[in-house]
Length: 308
Ligand SMILES: Cc1ncc(COP(=O)(O)O)c(C=O)c1O
Image 1: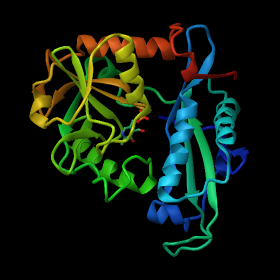
Image 2: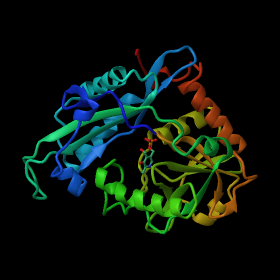
Image 3: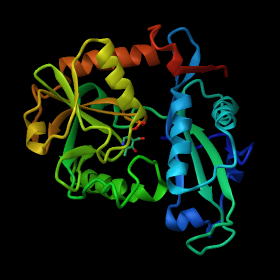
Image 4: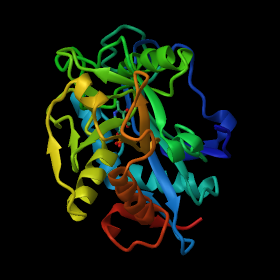
């Protein structure tokens, strides 16, 4: 992944990549009090480019900020335009966008009520987050020894910077052990989600995933999967389930902006189904990528087109 780009949008203007810097005494660097988004842009078969579900991502950025009580000094349309400007300034016909809102370096006390809120949007080209091979063959997951955040300790519906320490330690733990991704259980022991992806299993033709009201992040790709499943007539259940139910699932797959739809072939060294991407996973994935990168006309409301 090359993070290098020409320009970054910062506080209302595009600045050269090398000038998009913050002071080492930036409040959010120390305490994690900030919010961010991850958004993807795709080029379709006809050569047009679009940002996938931009409105919903910017809406979630504002919701995350509202949850922690951070005022974003821009409007949603301004930040949507900032995303488009970032892609255009970097000549990205497809790529990944990272908007972030954070407190500056004015004071370091925890409250920092008068610190300025800064907003930036970075963009770069980013391939398959969990690897091309993982996309094709399925990845190997391990249940983490760390739990997903408790709903009344952290604000699970927000993409809040500091909360991601939990995901980072879980991810590093499984990477060092030779797996691709960590599955997090909630504090009651039910399967919640992964470090940056929602999780689905398929049992006897039904897609099952943890309910929105549990400790998961309300993934925009998760919502996309649920809507495509309904469009395709695949029954969906949102309910809690345990790790042993996952072991005997017919199929398991993950969804996320970075991970897109990634099949899982193994959980805790147990093969899932036939050990390769299953039929329902492939059906959903095919439809998903046809809408994003192909020529499927469905759900035009999800595609914010732009030119480079
Ligand atoms: C913890 C967590 N769960 C799930 C997701 C998937 O969400 P989305 O599909 O909106 O990218 C993400 C990524 O944003 C995440 O960080």
